[in-house]
Length: 168
Image (tube, rainbow, N blue to C red; front, side, top):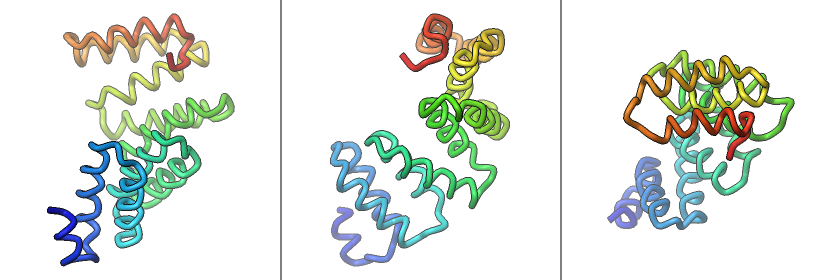
């Protein structure tokens, strides 16, 4: 029981992080954020907690909070591929002026984690929104080659072209 563990060891940020995952499964978002805030306060340089909190913030519409946490993660660990990928996707969705910066972060995510599919899918959408359809299709082809039996990636390739790179 995580509550009991936290009661006995209230300064262990990993206990709060683990409990936040249970709250997330229950979609109890205020409790998730409270536990992640506590974990981040107890361990301000632990990127796992900030990355998780950024994901929840993004999902709950706190885009500025998510961006701030992801920038902090990248400041602490410039080679944090997941943070670059997540930040790139947020920037792509946020505003037209940030799309080049979004691609820069997605490129970095792919460089750091070349076997990750999601940054390539997101970059394909970013390229398509910039009318760089050949680059978008190269990413789609790569994703399909990486996971040939996975229909969502095939669907994403078609969506990329038909939506001009904007999220469906």
